[in-house]
Length: 74
Length: 238
Image 1 (cartoon, rainbow over the protein chains, first blue to last red):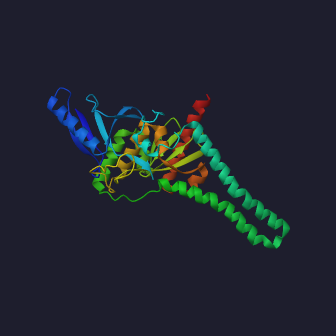
Image 2: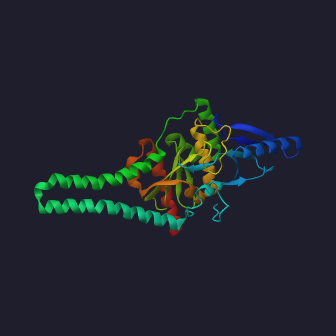
Image 3: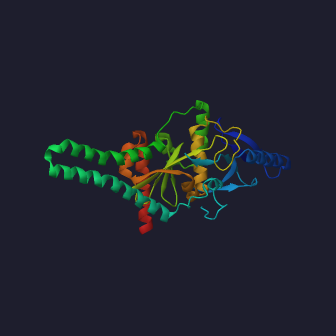
């Protein structure tokens, strides 16, 4: 089961869960992902130890997709 | 891990497009500039104090004041650097803090998780050195462990800043500290050089100088990063 989560004021919120063989869940997850992008979040997936990659489309095979906020110099 | 061309790497780089990408060469140049600046502050005060004492020994108090300036100015710079990892009380509810720390723990290994529990900082090895990431800043301990670059960097929770002018619906000042670190850590992992470019450099100097000024609870993290950075240096020279 793959998960789409957003790091927010609650710690994190699970926005969607899906399996690749469930088209309805996939569509709902993709919609939730696009909504978060529209809100200004970036989608991130881990690609190995100490490495992450930004994704612009929901990667259906990823176990965990995390939505992160933009950063800036303080 | 990093992308140098405009439009690649961290999207936040667009907000600071005039900054050259931070790489080995630029870090070394920055370090040399900070050393030169410190020398330019210290030497005149020491020289003037010594000269004054040689000419007129009764001017000893003025000489001592001059020496004090030579000591205090670099300390103030180091203090500014140390402040980027100053522990701050989180405004988030305890439950949210626990959840955020749990997620952060899933992103890092056992060693980093343990260090975070003790010091509030996450240790992350990169190509530029060893990073210590906190909720509102990061320290980069360079290979060899002798020099530290202190960066002020934060998660954007307000509208109109950073790469996007849109305020995320749930972005707010009550973001738990574990989440703040996780946001920064994911950005660092996706583009290390971009991360160092977007962040504001607060100080670059000797590790011992920063260590004296950081909160005592943070010192074990700095020591661990220095050990790790020495190992990086040994591997590079082997």
